[in-house]
Image (cartoon, rainbow, N blue to C red; front, top):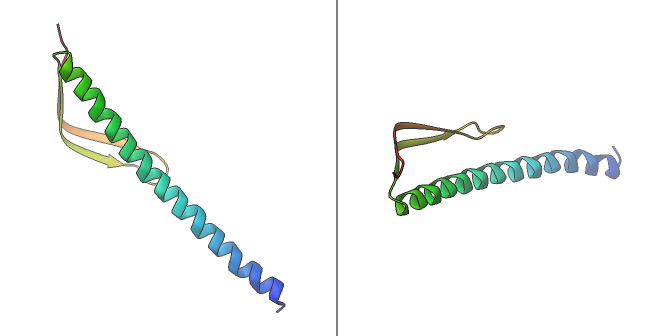
Length: 79
């Protein structure tokens, strides 16, 4: 085997690992961002006299989608 061929055999799996690690990091970033936005929206609703409560949030769907399930949801709109 030539050294160029060995280098290609090494680079391809490393490239795949880098892409997978990047995607995993992006998924967890997106999950944290979605959770933060949901908390901010609940705080804005609370400031307007309403309430949003989700007693048990569960984030699912890794690696291809982001899904949140919520048990015990309560939504009180102002007015």
